[in-house]
Amino acid sequence: MNKLTANITAVGKYLPEKKLTNKDLENFLDTSDEWIQDRTGIHTRRIASKNEATSDLCINAIKELLNGKNIDPNDIDAIIVATVTPDMMFPSTACIIQKKIGANNAWGFDLSAACSGFLFALETGSQFISSGRYKKVLVVGSDTMSSILNYSDRNTCILFGDGAGVVLLEPSNKGFGIIDSKLNIDGTGGEYLYLKAGGSRLPTSIETIKNNHHFLYQEGKTVFKYAVRGMYNVSKDILERNNISVNDIKLFIPHQANKRIIDSTAKKLKIDSNKVLINIDKYANTTAGTIPIGLYDAVNEKKVSKGDYVLLTVFGAGFTFGSTLIKWGL
Ligand code: COA
Image (cartoon, rainbow, N blue to C red):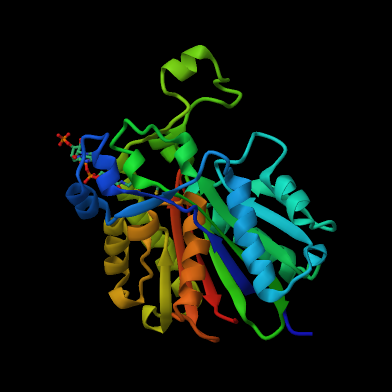
């Protein structure tokens, strides 16, 4: 039998209904629509309602995927959820999802790699499939960033939104799907982007709440520089080691953190701008959600066809970064 690869055979996404525009932010922050659009490319972001947590966003995305492909949840072997905003510390978001969608034969877990989470989860799921052990793996990327943002900090709250995306991995013996992944972590970047309290190092207390330690902290300028360098390096390396030129890439889906990061990375890679998927204007940075939401949009807008090469690249807290090369098989 030919070597098995993990093919993406279905996609789903969910964005909460509520929109928070730059104009809305002007009402309570010292900022402007012009500044945000100019410095980040963001116009609007979606915000989860009070009764929506990350598992709810994921379930809506998964239901769309399952209904679209008419899949029985009992056929799902595993559920991997990339998130840094789980419903709670435990049980895992995967367990909550498994129960609610009725995936009675599945196991699963959450995976924490911030904005790179989806690619780390995709590589994990891909290995599960190509080993021959599993036939249907759901890989979900979702974050409810509004739950960890300080809406009086203009440096951070303008950048993020809430959302979820999901793909189904199934085996292909014709070489479609995930061809290669190059993933990295660099812990020296940990001090530039983190959420300090609520873990075992600094459990929740009145002090941690008073000091705003349950909100995301970021040194934006530093993260910006590392993001461009990191995304460029992994993208270049993965293309080189697969003997694929940028001209062979039909679609580049980079992590949607800042339009200027995307533009600089694409320029360094010499990828034509019309091959770069951009949806940051509508959704902002949904952390682990950006790549699967981008994949969904690419399919929906018919930007990819069977046999096309697609390059996914991410960068996030940790630092974490990585690139995945796909031969599109849907
Ligand atoms: N509205 C208006 N002014 C703002 C602002 C806002 N929302 N946020 C910051 N500013 C101000 C700053 O206070 C600063 O003013 P000062 O010069 O008087 O001090 C000025 O704008 C420039 O700030 P600076 O931090 O140099 O801006 P920047 O061009 O680096 O853009 C980010 C800031 C955060 C948008 C940018 O660094 C970034 O996107 N970094 C990547 C972060 C990221 O997305 N990470 C997610 C994980 S990958």
